[in-house]
Image (tube, rainbow, N blue to C red; front, side, top):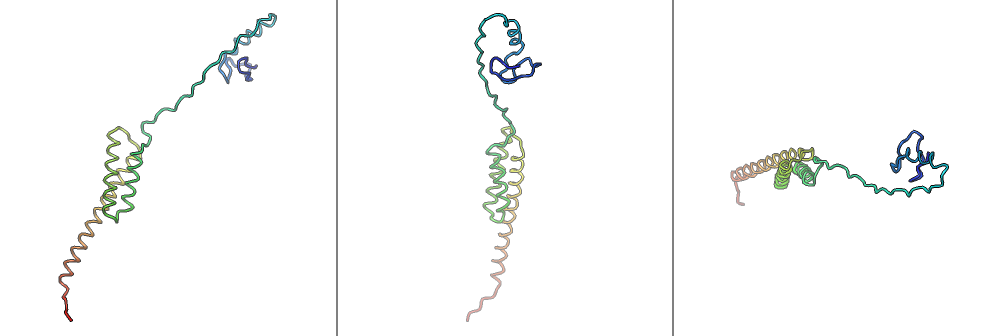
Length: 149
């Protein structure tokens, strides 16, 4: 059976057109009852189709969450550069906490917080290491005898 509205071929058991949604049973009754009469076909009804937008995912990663994760990873990678590691780690932690306060919870935020924490700790430990190396180096340099020639 063909739809009179759009011309799409449908199964004989279908009640509505699979393309435009027009009722097919009414068309069939019109065909059966109007076979002997010369009544003109009614004008087809035009329907406006609306495209439904996908639902918004509240836990989808935001730019701040992704930035938190990236900064956390950068803080771990550059843990040998103390200031960069600590700065990136602290910013990653701040970004993660701000997103959690907004009610967003996803893996990017958790990864940013954890990586930022690890990077900050490693950068801080490396800074402490270099402070001790410098102090011990200065202390041992003062005990080295200086000879004049």
